[in-house]
Length: 438
Image 1 (cartoon, rainbow, N blue to C red):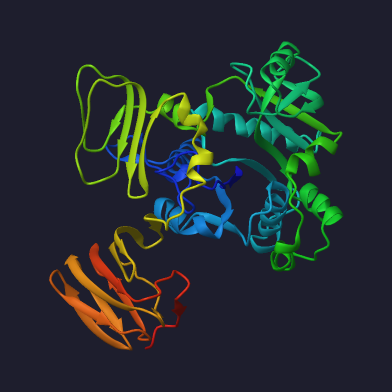
Image 2: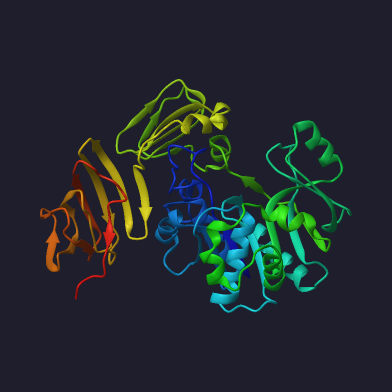
């Protein structure tokens, strides 16, 4: 299979575990087959590999998520980067052009597009094979997967099939309704639109060229910021006459709120937490290195991370976004391709960060114009380069860099470093990258 995973999200509804660079799909709350926790994107990726070990997986995402994807899935996974967010039609046009022009795929190749974060079992991915086969038969230009509704949801669009069988032609699409309308649609045999569909590369390229003036992938990438925001549903799906929908009746959950997340958690407690016997229906995730004690609570979700602490009634947790929109602070935790960083302390003219580099990884060779930096090595072994001078470092060593000096650190083993930034204007934009000196 050739699968494109759409990875977006701004990290508002699952605050404080999510932020602008750590969307919900990167939060590690599901127990893997081992003893470790894994994220939604890791879970979905591993499920695809279990169903089809040779599947080609490409993740269409923003620049902000690339490091987290590499951190969690490794460097081998395919990534098509959007220069900026422009909704699903430009994103799908870009990744389709990427597969054709950069990966040299034939226009006859079938592509299956699905979200990166559904909570499903392996049969969901086995059904994707059926989508692929339906497109190959050339009865339709587009084949959608419609989710059998379990309740009259107001969160999803609806697909109205003509026939009642597993595969049907489509009569029309309905936007997100109120509960009464949703009930009416379901009585007509409507299915949830879960954003899953399959097509041949040549078909979407043709549609893209009809709506966008471009020559190839590189040209489309260069003018991406000028494109209109429009969904794939509006631009293509709702205008296509040769279209079918395949009914999916297995488990499918959209884990978009704390309430739905807790329904899928295999363990109610994650992290250093104690609860007494009077607690009922309580789910807690504690990412802080401090103990948490909860007593006498019912129907509550609690989440603690370096970005903040949430204590909420489960039903009320769905209305978190407008309150999080009012929070204005820098990101306190992020996963990078080379490891992770966690902000420990913020002052007006200083910032203290704990950095963990994976073995063999390194930071970019760079400099800052408006701040000095100090690296205190707390564990592991590695090498630092400061203005071209190499130095071996280990636990207990301290390295100082003045503003303007070029510096880099390489981890020979897992390397933990306390980085102290000192300056009157500490900013993520005060950074200039260089090619390492030989």
